[in-house]
Every structure is written in structure tokens, then in C-alpha cells.
Amino acid sequence: MDFPAQVDELQQRVAATKATVQAAATESREQLRQRIDQAQQDAKDAQQRAEQRADQATDADWAEANAADTLDYAEWAVDNAQLSMLDAIDARAYADQLAKRATT
Image 1 (cartoon, rainbow, N blue to C red):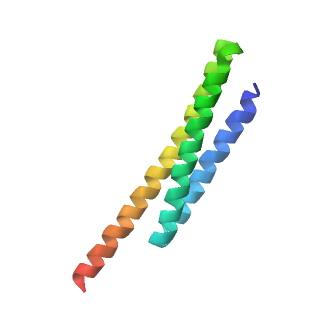
Image 2 (cartoon, rainbow, N blue to C red):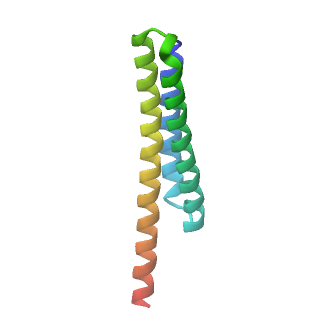
């Protein structure tokens, strides 16, 4: 297992999540919906990878498998955090849109 490489990959995912959330704050609701759909798929894919790796760990050393599982969980958590932030941005944009309509 190349744990430093996996941690580097996780760090890159966190940086990409930050950039995505920053960009999403200025996008239309349609663009946000597309990002949310993609984030949902990414979270689902991360969960499937984690489950698959757990299934394959029967012949691996327990400590190494546990570390890999924890990294997979962290990846899933980052994807889930991105999805939650995008949903929050979308909800705020929708609320602002409704408020604007109510005052006109």
C-alpha cells in the first residue's frame, strides 16, 4: 500500500472540493443542479470503492486493510461534504430567488 500517495490523492480531492464550492457560489441553479447530480454520483462511487476494497481485504494484513478503509471513508466524507455544501448553496439561491419574487 502506498499510503503517502493515497493521502496526497485525498488532499487533492479536498482542494478540488474547495474550488468546486467556491465556483458553485456564483453559478445558476441549473449549473448547481448539474454539480449536485455529479457530486451524488461521486459519493456513490466512493462508497462502492470502499465496499469493494473491504470485500477484497480477506487476504491482506488487517492493519493495512483498516488504513485503506479509513482513507476510503475519508474520500467518501469529502464527497459527501461537497454534496452538502452544493445543496446549501442551491437552497440559498432558491430562497433568494423566492424572496426577490415576493418583493416585486
